[in-house]
Image (cartoon, rainbow, N blue to C red; front, side, top):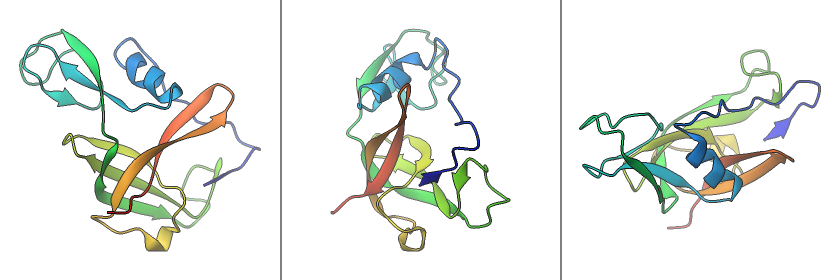
Length: 140
């Protein structure tokens, strides 16, 4: 992915529910929220477990591996965010922990992406104060 420096970088909204996730990303670690009561692992981080409604949660490391569940390739520069140069692909990955994350691919051409592609997480320090999780093809 190439960024267009004429536009500001999009930044995540960090709040008390997701700050553990973003701290892990800054440390180049993928962590997921786990309910301390029933053990459910969830992503997107939230204040309460959607299964048992407990507010007791912790952060557990993810293996960072999975496969592409679905994807979309932006080819027209006017249809995506102008701060990212087209073409680029947005992917939904399903991790081995059975949660799905939205992100971007790197080290792979958009035309080589396919549903079911094995992936692993990587981290892109796109600014001094911003790191994003991204995905690359994993050799099986």
